[in-house]
Image 1 (spheres, rainbow, N blue to C red):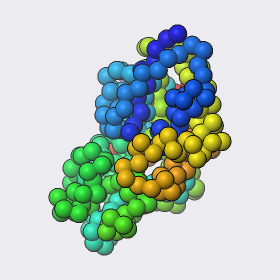
Image 2 (cartoon, one colour):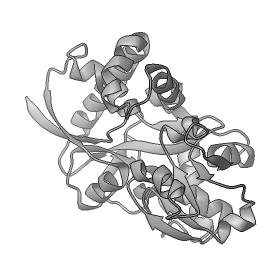
Image 3 (cartoon, rainbow, N blue to C red):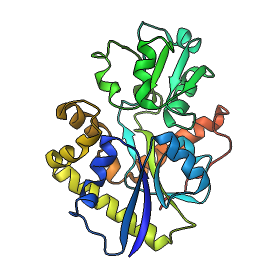
Length: 276
């Protein structure tokens, strides 16, 4: 048995995907797992260093890393929805460009998308959990949220300025917006091992989708005070058929995002995604 160090975020959708593996409903004959649970920007930085065997990262971060291939299962795609900019007051996009905006990390796909929409802006990096409070306390004018606040913002007394997934949908003829992916380190895993893990993760996701209620119960440890109903809604937004297997549409979307970023000078160099 080989121990695989796997990085994922402290979020309900990631926990949902690993439910089958973590509860022994999906069994690996060759791997044991050690989990490293961190926010997505920390995992992006781990991938830069090649610290983990498999990890969730942002699609944007993939343009900065080497020696990793993209798993075709476990990715997060929004379908006409995605990261959202919130504020306490109504703002036009031209006004937003002049605002101070909290972001969950420079290498996040959300940051790349917002940069595509408004260009350069004044940003403050912070943990994604702290962004709504930073807006409410006037530490920033607006915030870019990537988790449950996308659907609970009204209860938090915030206004939606722009849904970047909806913007993407309109501007790419309906492609799903690619946000998070899982990558495997080719320096620590063979191609056979990567393929085996990809299949295991797919089986675990399918198991969760076939046992939604119990899988959501498992994922509630990352509910951050939200109800099961809210968490199930959020999970179903980002664990969907594209998560089970991204297919050619998902690959096209990833290529599209990186090419758009390159054209605008945001992605540092031409990046040819390599898929497991």
